[in-house]
Amino acid sequence: METNLRERIGFVEGDITKMDVDAIVNAANTSLLGGGGVDGAIHRAAGPELLAETRKIGGCPTGEARVTKGYRLPAKWVIHTVGPIWSGGNRNEDELLANCYRNSFEAAIEIGAVTVAFPSISTGAYRFPMERAINIALRETKSFLQANQSIKKVTFVCFGREVYNKYQEVFKEVFH
Image (tube, rainbow, N blue to C red; front, side, top):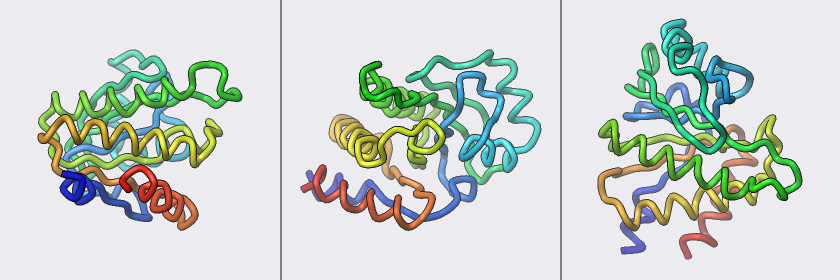
């Protein structure tokens, strides 16, 4: 079973807006109206229709997820999730980040996605410690894939070689 799990997870260094998957996950802010980093890049690549749809949703609390169409992206869907802003670890940040992954996977099932790509949620402007965040991401992914066969491939899209290498390192620990 572990081998099957390992084959269902991949890592690429690149641009999530170019991923040809059923759904990409957006590390959004609570307004869902675009921002910096991954969020801004997804909004720019998807086009103004995405902003029009996110305006109708009315925001998203930290740890939850909302779904929109992908519009001009190769991905059919965008799953917007709001990661926690790091405040030293005493404000339930770990659980909120885990909820981002859990709720994104649930959203992926609801829309029938078979392939999903994730960025490194909360590790940019929200300053979540990289290794800690990756460990949560991979543990939640492992737990989900063990319990659910509907998603065939989860890809983590890493912004830069350093992030890619850290995912590889933590992957070996979580999927030993």
